[in-house]
Image (cartoon, one colour):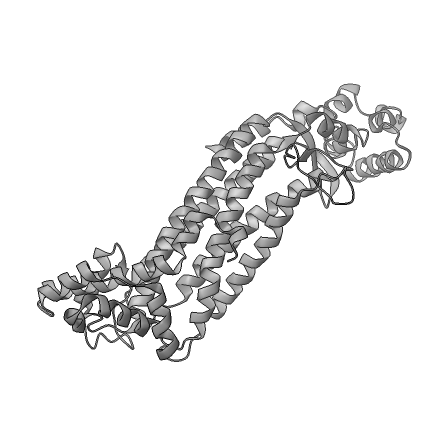
Length: 430
């Protein structure tokens, strides 16, 4: 991933340096377990642990000749270890190291992602509390529907973020596995007992069964969890972008002093970070599709997945880490305009109460068909002329002659519409 979207800590996890460090950890741990079981000399395991090291440039130089990254790595490490290096990589195939070490990388990346989503969740909860009673219009199909509160939006986002955390945790746990089962998964050189000891010393579980690789449905589930989380961020970003439209202007991204929105139009205050998040979410979703394609490999393994994962795993983790941090900042500093929300709610002259009025008229004894016909007739007139909807209803003798004034008044009671919202937000944040 390009530096523009890479935060340092996540970038370090997906660096070549860190990747080779995990490879070396797998190699050294394997040697120690093998030494404990009497399979290799103890001094060889000590030499690998103590003198094992690598130089990135040396690995690159060797790989340029041998065209195999694991061989280049083991050759470079062997040069540091010395004669005892004949026991380095003993009984292992390349993917015993690569897949097991990759699980260590993913574990570290997932922990960072969880931290970011937990921080976002705390901010969403705080703003849900702040705006729990801030009245605004709810919209369906982009059209005014019925009243809600701004806090309810944050509570919904908070709940979705919580589910994203659960999905991420489950997918990361499913990937907390290693394999030391050999070239086709038969343990021809090292037994399952050796694998179990190595994996558990690394903080992993051994895959119950594998071929040359850990099966890629696990990786696909992880990438799908990242894609869903990115889509939630996209969802929040799109909502903010809509609320920031000039015609709506109920909320907007914080616009810093000295910030400029357009090279040509000095008045512009554009939701650029939300738009950036929406764009990057497309990349993460596309990467999930590539991960699904990686599940089907030839026989016991081919390498068609390998080149893909060199891109989609680091890029998706790096992007979600970046996007989550950006969204946390957006939500924390989001500017709301409650007066504008109230004005927009009232701009349709009471039409948002038509649904409750329909129910109340039917409950009072009017047939639903008659009630719908009368309410819609006056609603359409209000849409067309801008006349006060409640006034039209009260002036209709077909309604006022059959329904008490108190019934009509109750239908237009905002507090009645919102009487459950406070409890809903409390439940969502519990």
